[in-house]
Image (cartoon, rainbow, N blue to C red; front, top):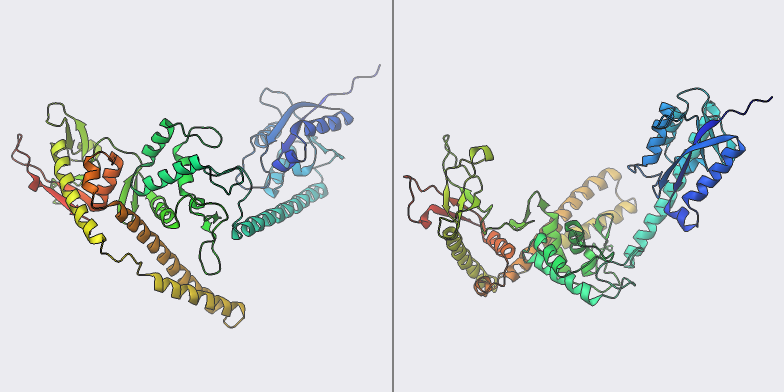
Length: 494
């Protein structure tokens, strides 16, 4: 009597990419092919590994099932203890497209003798140096083809960008499905949000307003801080476009205007760009100003600083915190944090009285600046230098392209000019931001402040425009003393 053929347990691996899906194929099709191959070879598939829509060619992309496959092969069994003696795939390029991944797979498979491997064409002996070399060669060829496709895609994106043509994908929020005409209701929210950012309103406040009004994304989801920030920071709002993180410009360095309808002006977008580009940590520092990510509950949180001298001479300088104190007039106290929290704990002052004094001082300063702004020259002083350098850079490039100057002369000079041009453009952006902010500080700032037209975030932004900080000096002598404004030292911005 003949003995039954031994069961050879193998696993199936399938990977579907976006292009495979467009061709009408799916993971199930690949597993069916693998099953037919296994049956033909009298192997038994004991587990299916699947990485759906994950590229095998891109660095940094983690394929969870591929990693689990390599781990199982190295161990010789699945997590539940089921033995594994081989792998079956549709084709090598479904398994790996990077040489490092292929080598890890071969090392894991050949960790023990007698392991099996097959694709739709039949079994392959990966213990053979020739077969392994051919596999690596195939990976290299596949990688070259992927890079060709990526280069073609990049060239196509660049060409479309230079022509001002929208790219594929879903419509952006604010535009119709053709990506050219505006969606009036969505565009109005974008314009309002953009101008509120310029006016100093925090993203958190804008986000809360959008959620309360029921504004939804194009996927009918609630807005999140990151998605809102990206929407308001998108140069598409003013008709421009970025490619690989840089604005698409013409030969003269001027941003190319797209064919879609804009929501705001280029100057307004440059102001937003200056605000968001400078954001680091909990605050925003741009052109010497600071805007809050989240609006604190009190007007001068983070602006007041402790002025009590330390034992070795310098003042404490810790930011004062606000604490509710029902026993005080106004109901809250600004005080220095304890030593454990980074302060000295030695300064505390009535919050409502400090707010009242600082508000009056700031409004007076802003009104004074508004009067000066009406007569100020709003031209950016670096325009002539930028135009001269840009023209010089073009001439240098043309001379280099025509072999009139050497590489050794061209690259160092061009690098210096590029750095200066970048510096000037950043300065121009800061100038635009300051002009936009100055437009907000009009002569009626006091009326807008007292009538409730400005929320807390906008008031704090205006205070930041006028002040670096306010140093709160200690009262001294112990006990409660009358409020003394002379113990508040404003550090004004010039």
